[in-house]
Length: 338
Image 1: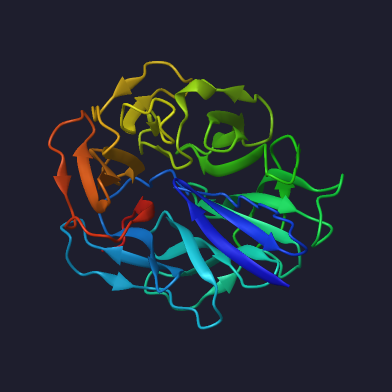
Image 2: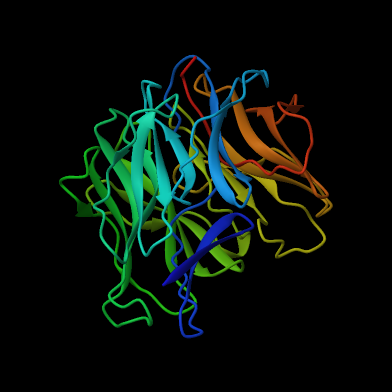
């Protein structure tokens, strides 16, 4: 069985090439993850495609000291990095070349790689985010029962588990999976106080995506944004818990306007637009807040050129961290590691 991984704009899709069937497992997800821990501004983690596979990198906020921290020899991809609150470890999604994908953790330099998700065929888990105390991880999980077709028992769900993979519990309603992977969940994030988990629900790929929240015990489910906003998967809480940064018009539902950064309150109110790109040739895709809460790192797009960029929380002083190039940084997360 050959599993092929393709990456759509703002999300990743996992496809199964068997008997002409396409089975999409949107493992979360996205542009993961993550409530930024309060602290001193350290390195920024992100993923980028290298020779057909996704690797993880870290870089200083001044654009110096670029380091590649994953390079698996088994053909697997590394995505969706999330810094631990103390900045010592990174949780990430590892997509393997056989029917399994899971959450892993590693040291900031890429050493001491450990599996969190059980190595189980047809179990897919990704978009990990640490809890504020670093003891738990929230992730999006998909469970399949047949390599060749979707069954009535296949489902997607948001789960919380200990950082060693034990104590798994479901905190969202189960979604029945379909052949085109609609609907599904993506990019769950803990709030800084640990009381809430936000995530994106995709009702129709690249058309209808909205942000939701639920209490960490699975109660109090609430939709925060309209599906018409067409939010990107990647979003992040500010360290003070007062705002969430999202991307609107992520798949150009309005074809005459770019994707832009927007701040909302945790209840979905008070939308404030930070960037104002009026042409689809320029776009801003949210990464995360800085640990000091004063800046937001994001992917800036200008035509077919891309760069890491930062902007102040009030929407001023946009600057490029890296030069514009053909390399597209994804899954951006700002940590405290020096």
